[in-house]
Image (tube, rainbow, N blue to C red; front, top):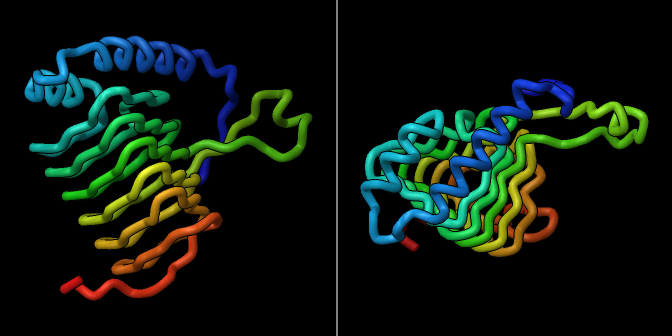
Length: 179
């Protein structure tokens, strides 16, 4: 759902400060304390399912707009700009250095100068694999069981059961469930 907000919004600025304080603490936690990491995320994110993990370092804008299903894994270096909702399904694998953006700025400099921003949700459905260094742009839905190849920039929806990669990311072929 597309929304508009002003970057000068005081409540959003405070939520961003809170998120940066949280991630500073989270990223310095003992990496062997898996349960401690999970409990910290459970108290911070919008939702996180059992047996899901995010490895440090991790960065986000707000935290409360991130929703992760059960059994999902987010590797090192994730950046989630969650100015609106990010939905990650069950059993999703996100490789290192991936970015999910829900916010963008106008092309016109006057609106940018006035701190106008736009947002749109991102959805990653169940059982997807997002390979390393992938960037997912606002408003994208990645269909269940799809694989996004390393280095891709996902600008449009990807249907279920697709192998897709490139910049911009394009569907290469359908994935057979027995591969």
